[in-house]
Image (cartoon, rainbow, N blue to C red; front, side, top):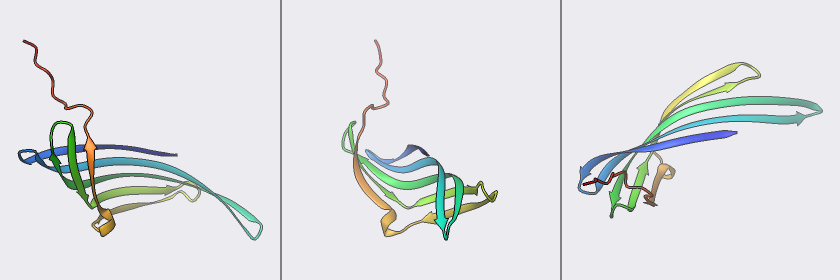
Length: 116
């Protein structure tokens, strides 16, 4: 079972050009069944984490933007339920595979229409 939630905050740098921070939260539960030399075992592991990824965005208009992300600052906690042991993870990833670029279509503009 996995869960994920994310949101992006936009900080204006210039007209239509923004610095972004993409925040995400993840939860997971994993059950592993294994058998070796006739011995069967089950291991249950739970994980939770948060991450923030910096990036840049350029809005062509109110509906289309291009964006990039560069790395991720993340904290996570993993817990083995069988042994009742857990460990914390904290790190920043900035590798070639942590860079992303893409385009997005915006469903709503977030602007409320004024009534006269």
